[in-house]
Amino acid sequence: IWVCKAITSAWQYFIVANYTWILMEGLYLHNLVFLAFCADTSAITLYVVFGWGLPAVIVGLWIIIRILMEDTLCWTTHTNPSLFLIIRIPIMASLL
Image 1 (cartoon, rainbow, N blue to C red):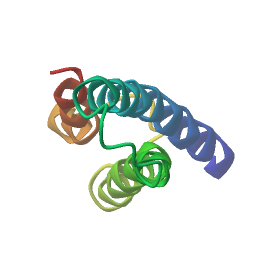
Image 2: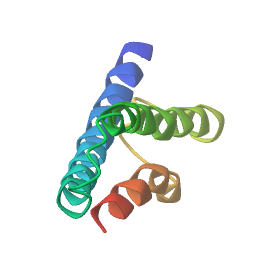
Image 3: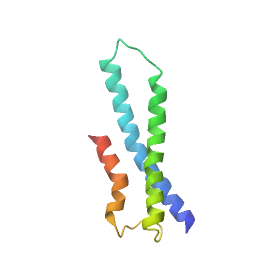
C-alpha cells in the first residue's frame, strides 16, 4: 500500500508543481517587462528553486499531516476534507 501512497504523493507534487511553474513564469514575464533595464539573470536560479522546491515543501507537509491524522487507504479519499486544503490553498493563491 506504500507504493500507492507514493504514487498519490507524486501525483499531488506534480499538480502543485504545474501551478507553481505557472506562477514562476508569470513573475519572470512581469519582471522581464517592467524591469527591462535591470537585466539580472541570477533570478532564473531563484525561479527554479521556487518552482521545484515550493511544491516539495507543500506536498511534504501534506504527507506528514496525512500520515499523522488520516493514514487511510491510498490517500485518494478524504474523510476530513480540510486536510486537503494544505494543497488547494497554495494552488488557489498561485492563481491570484
